[in-house]
Length: 288
Image 1 (tube, one colour):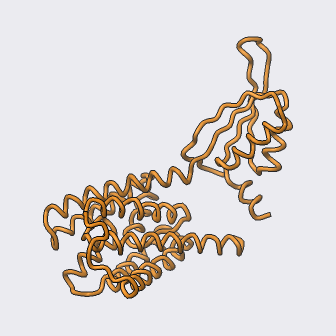
Image 2 (spheres, rainbow, N blue to C red; image 1 turned 135 degrees about the horizontal axis):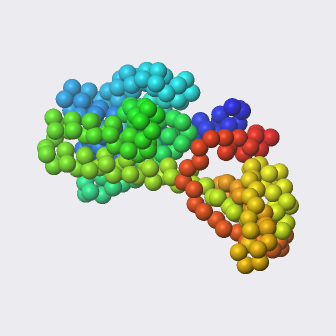
Image 3 (spheres, rainbow, N blue to C red; image 1 turned 135 degrees about the vertical axis):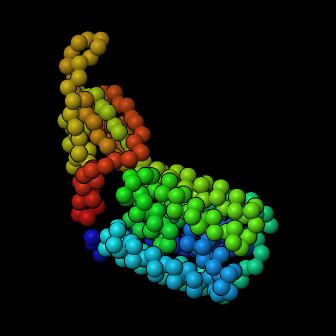
């Protein structure tokens, strides 16, 4: 991993943790929303043990961090060490600079929706960078790895355990809201992850397919596959060029086709997931 990439990824993870911490501090804590997360569990324990939430969050993250190293790997574990330190630090900063004791919106439903959407965005950014916010996100990553479940569903499964603990401090209403919120959080995480992973499958029929292929491979750094096709109308054999690329790369290809004025028939499909060595050429191009 190059130095520039490490710096960019570090900044991205830091930004994601700022989002996660803000969601926890400004929306979850004031409204006592115990949506399944280590922060929710810390909030319950803070009430029971009369300790600062930031301290309990740190302790829980350290314990669960070991599981990340053992079951996921060193890279994930190292990143989770960093994020586990950031969360209590950001919470501590918020506690001292922006003291909050009441709901910002004055409505628990608005707080719940705001929390779910904001934290899901932060979680999706972290998962996409092979990181997590620590705590139960580590559990979700482990569940996803060994069951092959979508990461959002794994977040829901791990979070439900914590959501149930709200009954020890709060009422039945809070428990129901926590369970529903945990379920919605998992859906939102999958939604954002799908957005990050969205790819385009491009199928092109053109007499100039060799020029187009050269552009895709040399300029965009993507591989191509050629298929022999037979036209149903004229019965002539044609060559179909197929490539998988990001939405931005597709826009570049579209501009190239328009500027070149090639006669081409193009069909485009949305692909939510690509598994395998698809991104190797793209990564080499970025490092060059």
